[in-house]
Length: 192
Image (cartoon, rainbow, N blue to C red; front, side):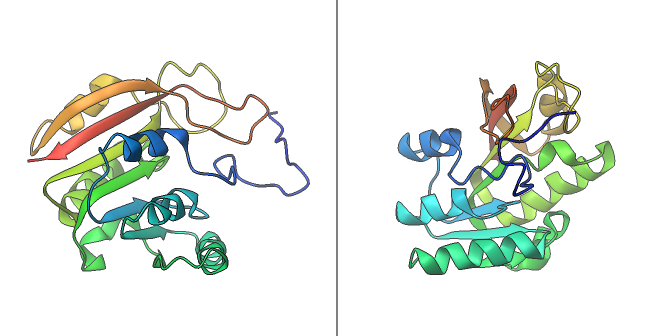
């Protein structure tokens, strides 16, 4: 059994209390542009970081409790970031279109069928020419804990029509697990 550094609070592994370094690097390098949708935003750290950098960001998550926490954090930091409890498989119903979509841990939780639905959902919320940045657990992570692993071949196959894969590189998302890191892919994919 894997224990958490902060077992007294029983936080999920992705709740680190700060933005992912991969998201910070994407923002600093100009890869994140325009309006941003953070799917599965959790407690909002990535969205709040981007808002502090001047981006217009919206955050969604299917869990109302984490959305409530994200809203409290936004208010405490005096940031105007709309957060919604919303199902990412139905982004067309959100009624908004974005220049950039960021995903730090949602894609890899879906079944094969749900992944295809999710990709269609992203296409409905992302402008043509917009960027989808996905951080997902890779097959290089040999642990048995956590979500299914995703291969580069799977990413390339699923995003073969209507998308251009700009890059897939090894990444190390931060967690609050004792191990601290896992092996992941950071994929930057353009909607064509």
